[in-house]
Length: 249
Image (cartoon, rainbow, N blue to C red; front, side):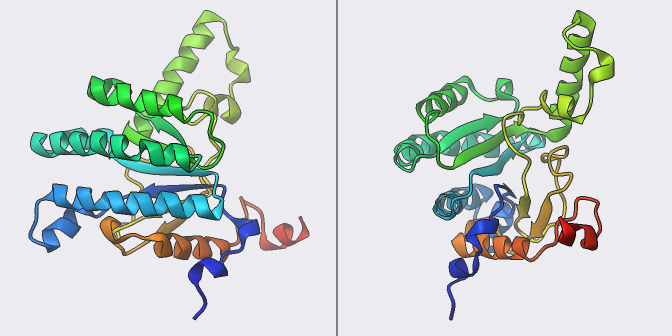
């Protein structure tokens, strides 16, 4: 049997993979446990996915870790998640540095506890010079919030005379997003069998290929990442053109 990894065409890798990590709660319920048990086991999946992406040579990996809507969850679950987050950051920092991974955070950092923000900024600084995989963690993130913020900052710059309204276009708008230094995802994976975007990178995924996996996030391993990439490589990406035009390019 051919290893899934060997089926991947390394010359046609997606430059940027984004993942909606879904199914932790369901995974825990199926085992008669509290939701946090699923989140705890999801850390292994994060580790496997980051390692798998780095080994393949993927340049950017964005993980949707906590949405702005997630603040509506029960306080005890949020507290447990914050504790899990800080313990994971502490335990994985050396691994990120060793594996040449650069950490970036996108989201509303003002909503996060100060001790988490300080630690994240510290690790981002420690890894800023790494030039392997860029790992982007979306925390307290919502795409509508991001887009509204970009529109507000553009309006402020128009009023102050920094930019002319007539010169605002799609490229201009992208420069005001949190992802301005990051290429748009080419592949978006959502686990757990749910088929929705959940307010994630709405502007950036205009032409992203979508892959919906039935696997619950705590069970997600390198092989599932490989399957998604193999599926991606079977797609014809036309960007509004016809198949005939693509073949001629």
